[in-house]
Image (cartoon, rainbow, N blue to C red; front, side, top):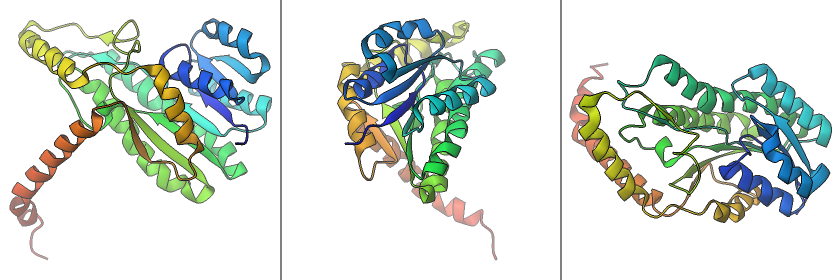
Length: 276
């Protein structure tokens, strides 16, 4: 397998760090970004020149373009671009402030979009590349108390599906990774919580119970190392792939429910078309 060059956002912890290690362990090169580049010191000590640590806030479009350009200048090419930086926003839709909503979309949607736009000219010029967009099971379904997070991931999924069709003629692949619950810090210190409205407390408690049932035993992030390598090495990689045990059953129930409701209301839908 030919050596690949990766650009990965959010490598201080979680999936970003695990995937950087997976790439570096097999001899690939990685431009690794984090808000605080000192969090990458251990990787630099271990892997030396194979890793390029970069301080980056993905919400800063100019900084994103500069970082991608710096990575390309250092390594001469980009093969895998991973948009992993993101965080969870908790709160009922009524509770989340304007600033919190904008912050969620600035990172989860615009950050991924800026990195993608910055990398595409290089990928088009070389006639190859693979963009990995980290979504969530919450990117195809939606759950109480994380509606704004769901909205950010649904937006990312729509953009990415359109992108896949746009760049396929240039030899560029797009894959949307949709993880289930994992033992990462997604719901811990990196998460944001809106100011609670007391009236929603019963619904919040119910949502928490549903989340426990839905997630089951959290997955092991280390186990995703082999999975992401299999995806990026595939001759025909998937547009969408779940990581974790359980999402397919949830998605099946969700989509079957949607189809049933659309069929039930189809006479109204057809009547709404009017006569032509």
